[in-house]
Length: 272
Image (cartoon, rainbow, N blue to C red; front, side):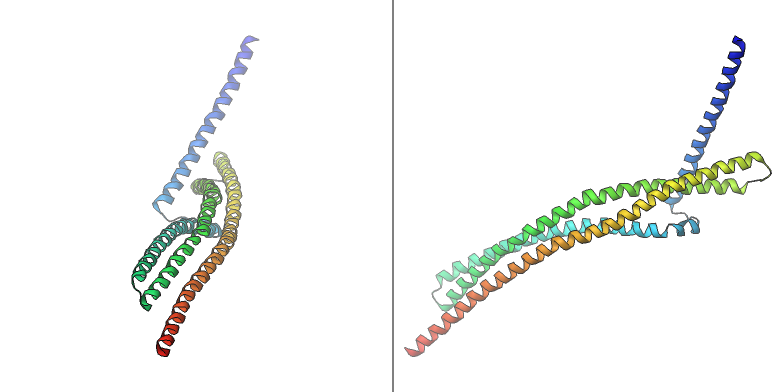
């Protein structure tokens, strides 16, 4: 009785060990073909044209995603440089205005009054120009938040998808290799082919799900960026128009004042 139990337990353990060995071998084979597919991708070797063509839509979405990722970084750098240029221009404009006012105060002629008026206009314009930094700072913050949240989230999904794509294409290589040596009359070979085929179907199911997620997220990412830029740049455009209008009005007022003063002095001279 005890011997029967021992025999039964040993048979059960042997079957369990064999199944585990098969599972380990299967996992090792999966890793082998996945690694081989990774090497093919890294080295740039030509892949099956039909497999590549089936992912044409996905690759187009990935190209759009990388474009959004790249241009957002370029936009942040441009905004930062633009702000530095505005500050530098405002400072130089203010210094020039102060210089003209200082020199004009020492000159009692009409030219001196003209220099003072122009200097005041330049100082006023330099102060107004700094107002552009407010919408630019907001634009920078919005784009940076967009990059850290929306783009980063999409990037994580893209990475997961690429892992599943590599696994799926590796499984296809495995099935192709098995099918080349397949003999339909041999049960073991057919059984092996069916297992690999099931692995391909499972890998494709995972890949297709992530493929759909990536395409949807990239579409949403592009639309979100358009809405973001449309909203924030509208604020910047309004601010820029106000700054330009005030600066032009200021310069025009001072020039008009100088012209009227010069004309009046000439009339007084002629009458005298």
